[in-house]
View 1 (cartoon, each protein chain N blue to C red):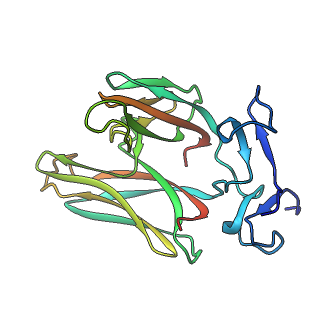
View 2 (cartoon, rainbow over the protein chains, first blue to last red):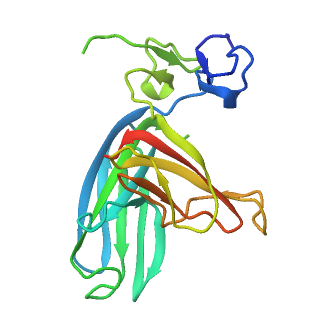
Length: 136
Length: 107
């Protein structure tokens, strides 16, 4: 492989001898390249799974990450987007999957009415980041 | 938009024609920038002030340094969360949380 590209070391390290952990960037390794970010809301009206589709149409599965919040009028906290937990009288879960052209982010609440996690209806807010980079 | 910036292709790809996914980097795609990183141990919730004034994205993992899972890393506790003031973490009782708070604004 030809020896080309760029690297920048952290302050205090000689870029010509620094190891990878002492570099700020090295083009020897691919960077995460951000494609888009966005948000959505899902109205949870009763027991079930509610899914948001996000199209990117790249034709290959990509790297992505997402977060969520519930009832942002009461709290500004955002949680990691993948979890499952037993709630009183049911299970709640946030999960995601993808095919070659879309990301799917789902909220599941199996609690019977009036709701074990929160009283129906309530709203879940999702926040996502997509990258150009393939997962393969 | 003017056609300027830098890009570097992966080995085996022509930088002039490579798709974005086949580039090591391109200045036309935002790079996630680390605002701060560190480790935290103890009993959660532990507030880690970031002083950004907006809700940032974050990443991290829980590492075990003792017990049956010693040497293993796993996803952060499901109660991990962020807000405009703090990242709130829950380190494992047998280790620590390593976190990365990103400059990039929450969507």
